[in-house]
Image 1 (cartoon, rainbow, N blue to C red):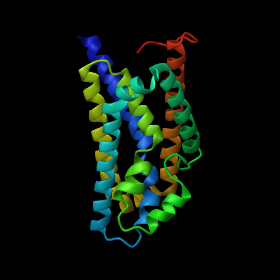
Image 2: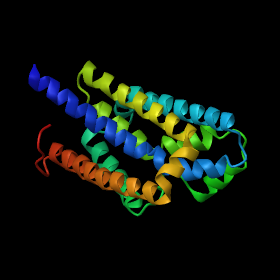
Image 3: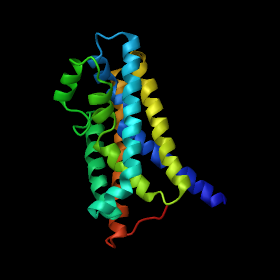
Length: 218
């Protein structure tokens, strides 16, 4: 019983950290402020709420449909883990260099957002918060969640991440004052390093399942 509890806690911590690092609301603060430069605090809060809800429901939808997608397309979990690991590795490399990943945010999307009155769903909620990296990671985690408890933990991690994104973005001006550009970049680099390690683990697990490597069981 104690071993099962420890495994559940470990799974939850890995799940929460990987999803939060990929959504990465801290790195989005400067872009969010630029896109809402002429907005009132109430409007910013409304956009932050809409973006976080979009992020939560989109990722939850992929979590629920993940195994169905695999079955329909004939994709195996090991293959998806390797593909997801490659995506995460590329995102991690961008984050280590304190850059917003191109898979989450392009210059054109940021510029388009600056000229829209409603940015909550697109581009803020998706793809800036819920990008390809977060989607693929959620699907891998759901594929690894063999019990109802682990499935519930994935959904809980999504809810906590979305709530954190709302709090950070709704207080974006204060977050920027406290952390500054340097602080945001430092956080991004730390998250990027951890994300790269997670990416390598995904690829090792996928290769191990295919018989090409050995992986430590978790």
